[in-house]
Image (tube, rainbow, N blue to C red; front, side, top):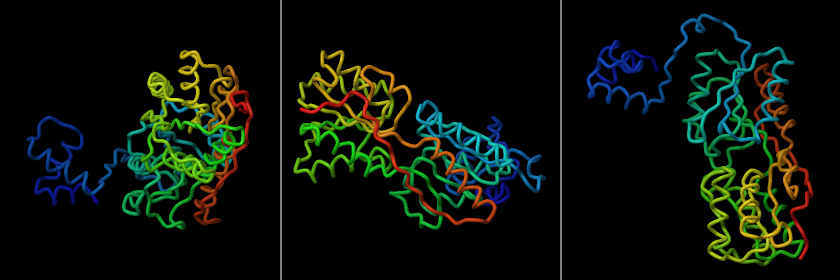
Length: 336
């Protein structure tokens, strides 16, 4: 798809399409609307770097980071950059918001920077072949996989933990310590991504241990944000809902929950135990230190680069790798 094709489909001149793509004011609203509609429907990616097009080979590998404020990514990014540099390549990083389209961003970077490959750090778990058709270089999904999408296993690579199984393990830890009224702090139960996978692990653990799901114990923060998590738990405590433990799908969210518990006069773990998944460094230094299943962040980054380099150099095939977590006991869980 070229700018000439866009012009033909819209029935306008090439210069009109160019003015729309460059956000020029000298275009009628009707023509602007028609051009933008075709651009969106065809997933057209404008090429903004004619200089780069003349290059026949690049040493650049792209890293698209979805969620600019996520502290979980810090060690992964460092490991990725070190591995890419050691292999003689250059890392080009782009950070985007949680609601932005990482695939479109990657496609634009591919064209503008002549990328050899792309690592997506954080993203959706429901890609389709049509969406990924915009990517023409090898890519690896780091920290997530395409559980809800329609990609064939040989069409993409990923490095992640087994989110559902690890959530099951965290809830079982609470159960083994005598807890039966276990609340779940999640983002959403239907996000087709990590929150939904870990919520499914929570539900599965309850039912396998003979506990019926109580929707009143599901605390949805709407995001992974620490403040939103704090407010969500605060509201649940004001409703006087009874629980002896909280399973949080992320350390960051657990930290917000713990503040809400303390402000409500509850001791941790005396009145309420808390367990999470991630293993953020900061969560080891809060009071009390958080019990959490630590993801192998550095290894996740290194393996993503290794797999990508094998694909770029034709030495390997697409595959999905699942890495184990390590339980850090902390001091936020007690037996009852």
